[in-house]
Length: 464
Image (cartoon, rainbow, N blue to C red; front, side, top):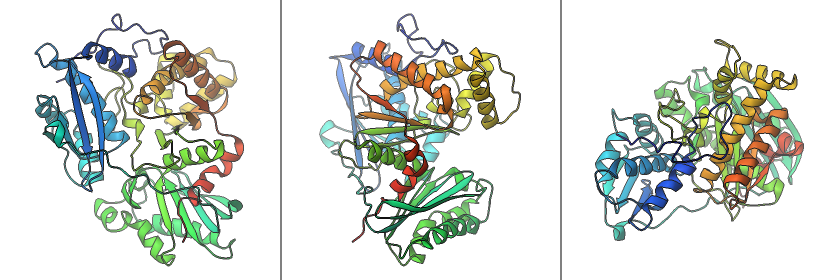
């Protein structure tokens, strides 16, 4: 189905991860392939949604010969996997390499290796199966995906909220100043009653509104995929039946907007709000935010300071091209970000480092590793060094798909001295392997950590 990746001897790695020496950076593999393909032919690709939103990608590819075919399929399939989860779309139009269409359709189809993506990206998020079509270059649609006019609206009386797996955060603001904030513990993951979720959010909104003379706008963030304020996919609601999800949860924020008399009400992915909070705090644009927590979350603010209609679900984006690499138990794919930059990644490396945690839950394993780090345990240090080295290569890979000025790093995995080591190792990789990549790595300050998410969420909706 796909080719074996070039061996490590063919791709010398200057910074080898101490606990993961077989790691094969996607960025190096891709660049080696493009050097081989330079001047051969050009593949032009469009990733299109039902509403006409279209994203373009272009690359040199090797000539269509039997010996080149496996490498080209490997290269394009992995790039397409990144694009599916970075930008999102259900219709793939390919010009310049028509022979790839049936192979990609088989991989990203029912029964294929990427059946998870076929079902999740295609049917669940964009409402139709993924499709692949060979076209002429002249017939490809132009890039079309307007920036969302969300964020940086601080005037008036506003409420901002963030829905997490263990608590609901909510804040009341007057002209950008937080006048009230609180966290309320809840347990959404396995609650089957839609009203538990809807009324929980309503309760937080009511409690914040009690501290305002009026409410002009409401903005919120939550893990998951949100399109036009509709919930398309979110782990918070995993306990709700499919029927109740479609009838109640999918439109829950539209229902809540109606309860609040139709005032401006916007909800987006929490990664987008994190990036927006960082952009507002830094007073800079072109910010990619990456949170290493339960999973790997991400968000992006473009060079114009806008949020794009992208997915930015980098947990599913491949960063490691070795054969038989770390496998994500949910999607079944290998080498994706979640196995490196999350609690799962810590647990995977802890076993290699010599920790024996057995069936201990991932969050508890992370706490144990952090405790060992404080005690000066070299095994823990090696875990963070490995994450940082892999992250450095991943950052360079992300820079091939995003325009990045600053990269905001946060999440439980990056807490304490371990986070400092991650950043130091990532910066070492960038300086050694990619001196041309000029990206500032930033950790949010305490004020941004405390209130930045709520302020950014509250600022999403324009008034008037």
